[in-house]
Amino acid sequence: MTSEPRPRTFLSTRYGLRRRIGAAAASATVFALAAGLALAAPATGSPAPTGGGIIRGDDAAPTGWAAVGSGTNGGAGAPAESRYEVSALAGLKAALANNGEPKAPKVIYVNGTIDGNQAADGRILGEQDYAPGYDINKYMSCFGPEGKAWSDQTFDYCRKQRQLRQTGSNNMKRQIEVSLPSNTTLIGLGADSGFVGANIVILSATNVVMRNLSVEAPVDFFSTWSPDDGDGAWNARFDAVSSVTSDHLWIDHVRLTDGRFPDSEAPLGFRGKSANRHDGLLDLKDGTDYVTISNSKIQNHDKTMLLGSGDEHVDKDGGKLRVSYIGNHFENIQQRGPRVRFGQVHVLNNYFVASTEHPQYPMISEAQGGNSYFLGAGYESRIFSEGNAFDYTGAGADESIMVSSYNGHRFSDTGSWFNGQETDLNAVAQASFEQNRAEALKEAELAGEPAPDWTGWDFSTDVGWDPADAYSYKAFTTPQAVRNHALQFSGPGVLTVKQ
Image 1 (spheres, helix red, strand yellow):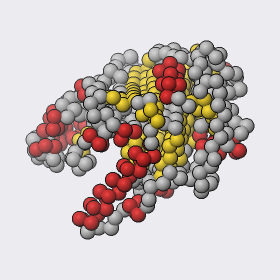
Image 2 (cartoon, one colour):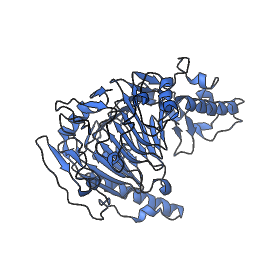
Image 3 (cartoon, helix red, strand yellow):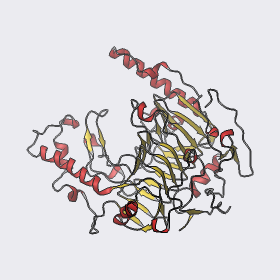
Image 4 (tube, helix red, strand yellow):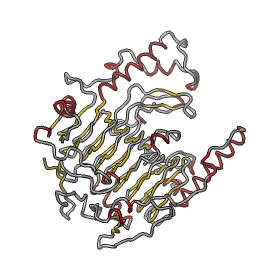
């Protein structure tokens, strides 16, 4: 790892690409993001130059952090008896158990949509199945005015409602949680194959692949109101996909979204705001490491992607959270696309789209008095941004939406665009950091307390690492190429699956 930025070498091609080659990765598999190349498959061959391509159960991550070290190929090499096709939750859980050897290589093909709320008898469970008698309106009535402190004594049913909410949440967790063990490849057979209402967890696992899947975030019927979270907030329990203390993950050609259940249509909560029933779409926590998220659609959600569990968790996350986001389509995500703590994160050729006027997921930048942003530079984060295209429209749309600093002072961008024009993303990141620092210093002075350590640091574009030193890749050099790839070649259904 160098302390000074490395000179960059770009090899131009007829497709408007550039190739970054680092000495340590010169012989690595190259990731093709060319117009007409949706994904470069590894040893099994490359897709045809017409935009087609093939997904196989033995494919390995071709680039990004998931390709570093031992690489990531999931269940590659699994014998015939450890290759499954499933279409219901019970069958999926049986396949993951893999005949008593859950950590042995396995390839699981998902045929159709699996509902996490589907009981063994085929019924789709709802709120009253998990906690008969629970009523969110009664639950809210047990808080003080404007959602202040809870009291069991407010009404005679308050204690019971509190217990029902917790019981329902625990029952729901047992039902909808799908745990992916080590050496697993999970592939959707069709464009609409995937999950609704499931909580997919990768816990203390290594070498996991998810591809060609559509994932609709689960609806938490038992979201909790936290009066002391800022000025009060609803906190849902279940992510669509999350990783805890896992490594070598490849998530490719996946769609993640709120789908049919936007929070704007949730029950009305305190202060005229809907009760948020979704948590993260794809959160990586507690030392998760070596991850590539590529060619995927991440759409219509609020708390989208969180890296790191908290500023205080250097023991878990320091030196880890190495993640590559390559060729993805982020649309109407409101925040956390991603929000990074600690990690060495490569954000390459992603297409970010939003509007201040979207009816359900408007993105209102901090400069306009909102709290929306795409890239979040958190504590000790080291984001290397490269060739990303940001299209932000509507009344008041401004460049500050691209990146916000959350105590993060090291950020580097090269070659990104805002509404089709070259942009100085580094200047936006620096301005956000310096404003954040000034506010923190003022707050500490008023409180008569020591200022946080990060307020003593200066902003720097030297992030202390370069992805080209870890792996090779190709990159687009025009915003049109980035848009084209995102719109035509990301998400499920654009590649053919071969069993």
